Length: 490
Image (cartoon, rainbow, N blue to C red; front, side):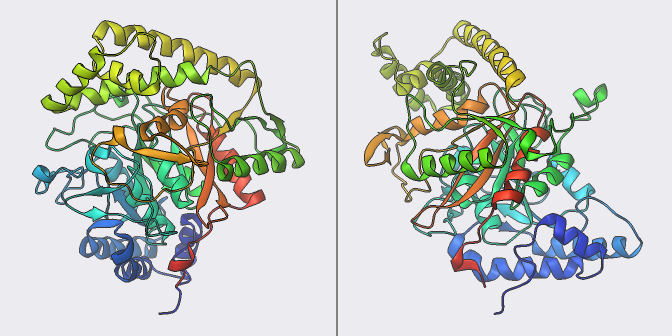
């Protein structure tokens, strides 16, 4: 079949084409459906299909366009991460006992996307409990990376990133507590934005069968994924804002504009190393090239600063706080095992694995003290952002790695330039932005020598999400962005 002219267009371009009557919403939806049916057997990204309702919504969008209506997402094909509730479709989070759970109402983000005119094609695959940088479960199987089917697409929003990279949708949603937006974007060469903590109300992105009630995340966020930086802003503006049942009773969102509109006006700190977790030559090389290119473009680039918070202590604190949250949901046998192993820890053991064990078994008093340390960390970042507009650093230490479904993650290893490191220590890089709750935009930076995507994250100031998003847009415009995978170019 001939390559579609629409599959890899940006959402902004598709919206313009719809307004100019160059294409209809039904045609875009049919094109996306055909592409999923043609290619998704190899990728397995769109695990729950809702094509019937999508075509109905597309016909309604065309009628609205004919009436002269204009909405931000009107007629655009979108996929939704499986963890978001969509009325009438299963929400399982990969848990087999919940395979038949079907919520009766949409997640708030889904409601907002529908109200903005988005056409929801279906739901994208996730790991069990959203707890992996791979996307596989016993209900829907394994999602593969469109650049190399033997490798992970990332996780936990791996289905979303793979669907975008394969041209199966224009926009997608994801969520992030351990890099689950940024890591799959990195591994599949697309864009993603981890918003400032609690910028996007997450009601309805809830593990089944718990009720979908307003909640604030301590570390977790939901956010947009796309093939261009401008599309991230388009979807973020729809998803952002307080829950009308909660903070929205009194508060309205008013995000500040980006600090700068011109690339040369930005002051950027570029970091490519971490004392506890190195990056491999592909990742370092991509970031070094970006730093050089930015300097040549007139950007003020620094490679070190005394203002930068201590990454070692940041990672240790993040491991404890993350696992104190995740550990609350461990089954009794796993919790007992963690308690037994934690009791054997030496006080001198400050490895990231030891800190994760301490987090699982932490008292509330210990958590309160850690929360105080996090407040101090946020103050350090505020001080840094008086001198810099953004920090550019890695998302993960290596490009996409081969599928590894060995059951115990703590026993897995990741090879970085030939040396093995604990698999879960990779949390250190995404945790740089997660722990203080800062916005971070994942940007692709081309392909490695092996043809795998590489990229970086742009960390910005608290609630100044438009600043890293604008910088991502300018980097894309100046140096290039998404590179379609060759195996899905038809």
